[in-house]
Length: 273
Image (cartoon, rainbow, N blue to C red; front, side, top):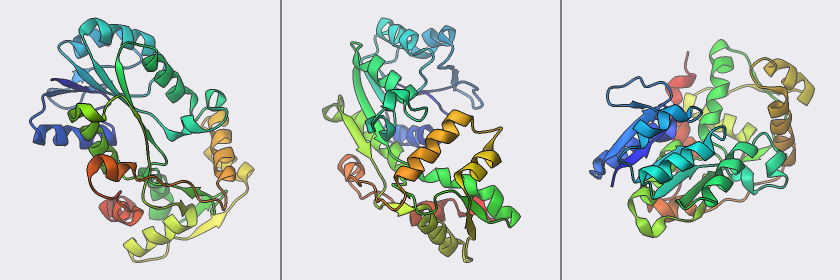
């Protein structure tokens, strides 16, 4: 069994590769911009890169890129691929997912895979804990974090847990062919996450509330308007409302999901000046 791990520069793929190696599972790393020896070129938006990457592959760990998913599926079937594990998103579970910039691409990839002859396993994480890295620049510069909805809840999940979950479903056939909703162990507001981060760093992390329009103006230029609007709507819907927590990480990995405190300790250096 040989596994293609796409998005080799991504956090989950970087965690998955050594887990497969530890189990002596043959695998091939693939990236749109290969930067390490042995990593093959596979741009999920460029079908010309698919045949070489998929040759001899039986399972694929796939990131959700919708632009050429039909071509990818066709090439995978032709290459003899049997199983695809998709890193999707729990945003597909919400109402109006097909029209949401946060969910549409993930949903399109899911639907294409499910309509294909490929056995498909869907990993649907909630909020990535590493989204907190977006606060690092402000923190290192001494500016307060500006939040439109500091009381909005999320379910931050550690990327290491996602890598272990992917390793589990890739190596155990009994776990494949299903959809899994993965979360961290707690529903936490942004304000609480910042308090936890401050405890790890040994100093409070200041933040200030801003209006949604102020935040949108600040991110203009690097977060497209429709995506910014979708984020604001998502945060508004979770303001003061805890999200559902699952035990899926423990079911797949055999241990409870890592806490946000653990994630903060693992990444503390990213926030220090």
